Image 1 (cartoon, one colour):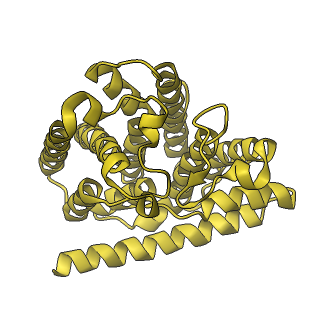
Image 2: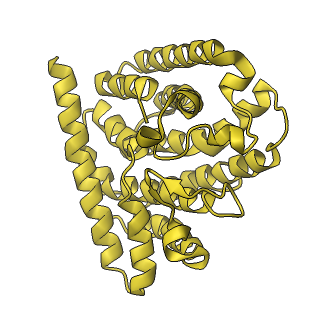
Length: 297
């Protein structure tokens, strides 16, 4: 399939651009080797890079050059990586493996891991503020404002807080969706929104793309919960059933496995309907949606 080949080539090209840029940014910092090594260890641990790729693909949907968002993509991935470093800490999820490798604190110690996460978080905002080219100051300000909401107490941090408070409790479906809308969905939504902002989207385009991102974020998490039970440690890079061990409510636990799979299909359908309503060239965003629905890790 030609479209699939073009999609795969796009993913490979922009993942490489992102990897090179992130390594360049951290390597050029005036910081200790320990701190930079700890930051790079987690940045280079791999992963699907779904969030920055969504930003690139959104810009492309508007018929513009995705490269204009390279530093925003790096900022998004750095915030995502910081959140993983902190989530893995003994005071949070206490995980030993992440993406098939020892977690950051297991390699560098808890203090270095915390500081590496802090450094990645703060660096992300500097990257957007320092973007060169023809990006207006008002656009940078909007991106920084939206990112702070998506990553902070009105977004990802609130989701993690609610997740911790929900451990060991039987949550309702609404409570579970609240956690994932904030913990996973808000940063994923910013990834799409940032691409729209850089492309000069109007209010209605942002609204429709936000609806797409909302349903994609929930689909992503439902698939994650399914993989926690049906995947293998080799593929998902962490122990199978870790959510059960940590007494976390999941979609399969609340809906049954069949119910969770139906919910996944429903959110994928709604995501695609929202994309169609934009009138943009969204074929590659549709491929990314399919990738989220069928991913094996």
